[in-house]
Length: 209
Image (cartoon, rainbow, N blue to C red; front, side, top):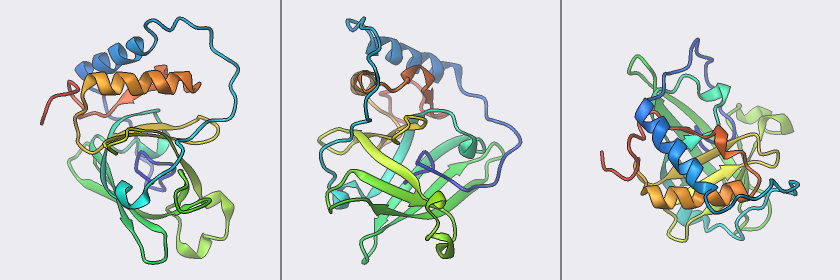
């Protein structure tokens, strides 16, 4: 359900953007903090856990990418990566992913998300392929809510294999302590938080634009 989401069928770029040194250092500190006082051997990985429930109407709106595992389908995004979710009458969710490329242009991908399970299930699937291909399982990407703050201001999204991870927020800046706490919880879930890459425009976390 995001450009940082589970799957994006966007044009393949020729190069990746350079990431700001300050943002990279900031996230590195947060990742290190996630392990302070928790010098525990990595446990055998069990199934990835999700949050207990998701209030879908409350989840709708705009989310900004704060950090992610690097992936090929976002390589064209240089800054301002965000997702907008809108509930549809049939129970699905319209997904609009946007970001700015290195040359300043805005690129957009429009997709559809559906819940897997009951009305409060935190497990969704997203597709950006044409509707006529919706019958094909391969066009749907898993979008699991694995961590969500009670105020619905900060969320972590992954998938069963732990190959992808996004940290999203309601604003482009996040309080460092809140993000550090989430990163620590994600590490305890067996996610390799050392792979987290800050959003290009995340800047010093906790500051306003």
